[in-house]
Amino acid sequence: MKAAVLGANTDLGRRIVLRAEEEGINVTSIVSTPADLAGNGPIIIKEPQELEVRELSRFHVFIDALSFPQIRSFKRGEEPLSQLQQKLAEAGTIYLGVGDCSLLYTDESRTQLTAESDLLQAMGGGSSDPRRCLELYQRMLCWPDLRWILFCPPLLLDTHSYGRGRFELTGNVLPIGLDGSSRIALSDFVSALIELLKVRSALNTCISVRGLQP
Image (cartoon, rainbow, N blue to C red; front, side, top):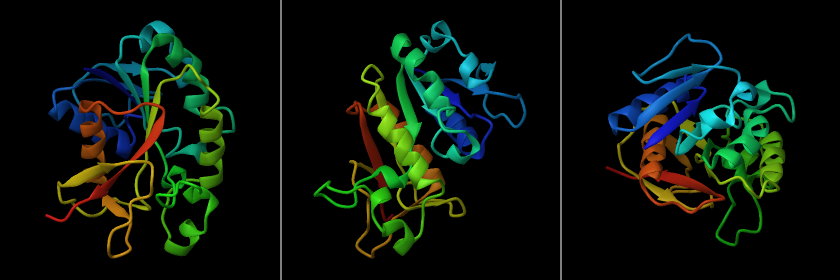
């Protein structure tokens, strides 16, 4: 499998690159500047809007570690996803974006997204901008030719713990444990994202993950 990682010099992007290489995936890092890179694969130094269809068509999957996690860094309509969605559709490359917990449903009734509820304020969590994420998500739903998956973390993406190494891929509902918590270690989240690459996942949907006890 050939994968591209956009934002490969962010903390999240570096972790994705290294974990993917451990699993034998051919990874190309896509960055605006060559600083703080990890891994041994090819590098493309370009702004997202400069990428061409022929370049994108070389990859089975395009992993975006920027558009939703760092949405506050972009003006509306200038997120990498907005600039690349048509090219990705023409290239036939699957878009795998790191999403946001705000895009998951609050419960199994699937009548309300977390972004539309009081959960984020009541329980804390989410590291991005729920309203902006929801706006981008709603625009994405209007791009019928794009094949996409959003991999959304629970409420808390724990960057400090080492992780347990055990997790379970779930659907588009916010995972909440029996103790009322909704969290996963970043290392486990990245491992789960790589696991998602290896299984046949449904397209055009959000997917999440829950950490499991050892």
